[in-house]
Length: 130
Image 1 (cartoon, helix red, strand yellow):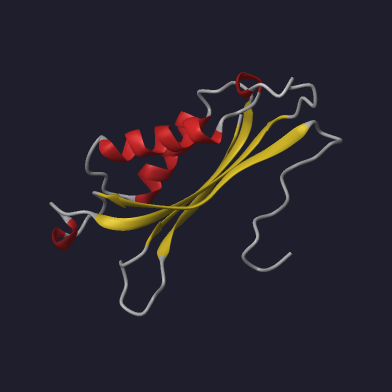
Image 2 (cartoon, one colour):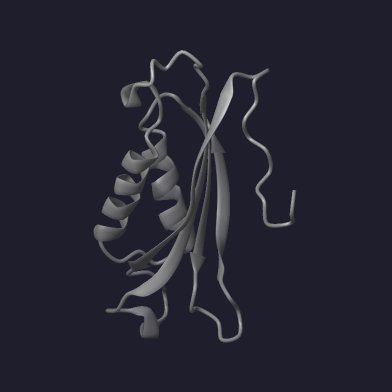
């Protein structure tokens, strides 16, 4: 495991499957500073979900947590309008993920890609457990 890999989530012993979205790059209205108001800036979202692992899914999408549905929720949250803090955006994404009762844990990383000169990204990572 490299330094950039998140800790392992999937566990057969605990009946947990790992569903994830990596490096979802979007434009968001985010920030507290005057220069961040009234314009979008690029953010990168990473989501790791610990979900109930049922090996008998019947190859049916409705029997698993759908990462496309999670992505749509993230886009809808960003479309709601300006948010001041990356922490707030991360909490909203985590709450949306818990709308699916099969989700037992959520890790969300929100990175602002142009916030600091000379830095690739700044941001926050949260983890919540049901």
